[in-house]
Length: 374
Image (cartoon, rainbow, N blue to C red; front, side, top):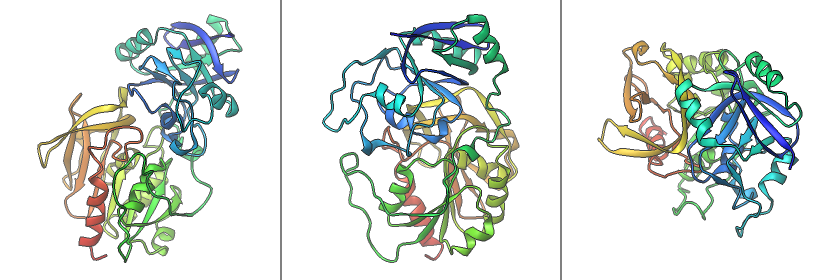
């Protein structure tokens, strides 16, 4: 086994062994607390620019299959696990995790004390790091980690945008979701602004009875309105929301003209378009077990989350109302516009992988379209 090292900007170095591709990458080192779903995490465009550490110790045991991809290929910078399973066992598996990462040039490392790494991130906060099987000199790697650009102020959305406009016609996997798709006509037309969208989101929109057109997040308001949408969806995506000025501007222009629903980065961009501000969380919320309180019903939802930024409550304009709160740190987890048919959540109701508590938000959006005259 070839050695590999992870160096953090605070000077800490972890030594393990390499899997996947050989090489060197830099990024923000974060952790995800999900026990399953590593394939969905690998292919989630929201992880662009990040080296992801899995807290669950055994990873790779069910291999890789083509059905559970959340985009066409892995999007993260690097991948760290405690134990890499040497064998995979699942009737849908087509490939070993290490072979999949090697095929897509993703550097991985196993064999380190991931508990110690996660504890350091929780205490010190998310840090820049370098993961390498090429350079094994500690001082060199720490210097590279310190000079890494990080996430703040970078527009990572442009690195994961789709090439053009497409029509989405795929529904949810029946193995994962026990439901009957809504096929009633007419099907309201939803334009999904793709800032790095997970594929399970348009699958949900399709199955609640919407006709879905996916457009790059750089598409201006005039071109979106020319598609004659009945509603606009604002997708998840990577990194700092404030540099995504084109998306903020477009959302501000569309607000009040069509109903809107935003998830994760889309939630943050919606808030920014209304005049609020965002801030960077100490170590983010990443996992499939995050508790959220619905302030309307008083119910607690267990949610899937993946974000390192949040909306700053003190900057909320009067027209935005808080609908959900994260129960781990009381940050804003949902917003609703008081004058216009628009709402958003910071978490991932499409839950791939993760709990299904929040799937009601997709029918709610469909109902909002109906109430608006569709």
